[in-house]
Structures are given as C-alpha cells and as structure tokens.
Length: 227
Ligand SMILES: O=C(CO)[C@@H](O)[C@H](O)COP(=O)(O)O
Image (cartoon, rainbow, N blue to C red):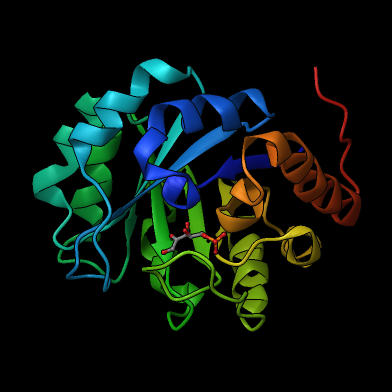
C-alpha cells in the first residue's frame, strides 16, 4: 500500500497547526516536514521549534527531511521535538555514516536522501543503516517545481539495490496524480506531495490525497483498501 506523506511546505504557514490536522484527517499517512537552512539549499523554512509546536496536532508519523549542512548538531533537537523519521542528505556530509548512527541511536527511523544529480551508488555503503531512502525528483529548496523524469532511473536503481531489505523508498518533488504512477512503478512506496496535496484549500485535501494515492496504487498494482 502506498504511503502518502504531504509536505507542509505547501500549507498555509499562518495556520500550520490547523493545516497539519486537516491534511492528516484528509487521509495522509505521514506528515513530511521540510527543514531548509539557506545554505545546503537556497531557501529557509523552519526548525525544531516548529516541529515541536506541530507535534500535538496529529499522531501521524512525522517524517523530517533535513536539507541542512551540517546536520549532526541538530539531530538530537529534531528527535526531541517529535520526529519519528529523520532523513539526511548524502551530499550534506561531512560524515553520513555518523549522522545515520546518531539517528538510529536516538530510536528514530533513519533516512538518506539523494539529489537528482547524485548517483544511487553514493548510498551503497550505508544501506545497512537506513530505514528509508528518499529520492529527490526536483532539486531541493522549493515546492511547486516540475518532476525530473530522469530521476525515475535512480528510483529503479535504489529499488534493485535494496531488494531483500526492509527499506522504504520515498520520492519527493513534483508528485501529482500524473507523476505518482511512474514513481510508484519505478519502485517508490512513499510519495511526498506538497502543492498537489494542499492545492485548493482544506475542502479539497481529501480529494487530492485520494487521487495521488489511487494513481500510485494502480500503477504499482497495490491494494488501495485502507482499514
Ligand atoms: O523537499 C522538497 C523541496 O525541497 C519537497 O518536499 C517539496 O516541498 C515538495 O513539494 P511539491 O514539489 O510537491 O510542490
């Protein structure tokens, strides 16, 4: 079954608590929280204080995506703020192995992210340390960008590399009902969607979430029935 993880980067920041609750009630499985530092990526979003403030609004998995470098000085703060999964970029360095060790050591799911220009082979040495691989299908930093189709190859390579292991494959950037299918077919089982999940305001969230999930489930031949 596809896991749909709306990115609150596309939510109304003046009402983040209500938005988080609304998208959760609309059928989101996880909540994706994009943390940007204006250094690793050319945008600044929010830090652990916001993650902590949002934690009481839903009990859904908080999937924290750190687009920051270095990440290590902040891992404990995000873990304490209520993250359930913490993903760091393999490009962010300086010691991806240590970062993943720290995340696992804090009892959280550890994720490693790959930018569109990074080969899948970059994460091979740390595969036994991760619970999820996040493949970026846009260059990180902003919501609302177009899906980079060449990244489908990376998803397929990660799928092959992780065969036989219990590792989720997440895809992030430009996910819509049109791109969800190819991403799921290539091997992704977690879809992060910002603009396509939040477009149209709260009345549309349920329809948006269902449309993205249905496209992915159909393409991957997954059972879309949820209990
Ligand atoms: O991490 C990022 C961007 O850096 C993503 O999570 C985007 O925020 C997804 O937004 P859409 O492309 O779906 O609008």
